[in-house]
Image (cartoon, rainbow, N blue to C red):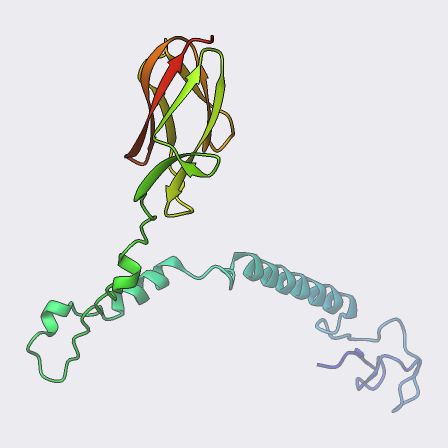
Length: 216
């Protein structure tokens, strides 16, 4: 179909281009659109129809874009179907005795070595000794009101256990630890008499007899 419409000459009844003002065959002047103009050659109608067709196509494409499922969100039905069709792994019990089937047994956990399982125990106290001025003291005499500083020697060295100093009779003497480590204690004579001083470290004890005399 030609875009440029054709007209018929009113004189010779021949068709020629609508751009001409005269008939190229007989030279007659064209009057209006000629004697006969083709009804289908309406340029404005063609343009309107084309615009309508383009509008419909654009609307259809837009609908397809907005209604089509997103590529990032796959169809859940398809995913479920794929999952249901995937073969399930047989149980280990079903593989027993089946030729050509490898049965994977759990690997045994490594047993701890004797060095790791045995906890290093702290050294225990083997011996406790009461000392005075660096010498062992198991018996001494003091007077009422006097103070005597004693120490405890713990074997082996480096043992850290609670140290307890105790007087068997506080009316005779009192004993109080005189340092933060409690390895040193002060004995204060209170009254005339004899009592026993005991020091205990980690269940090991040592004793010293304390005799208190009146001042002359």
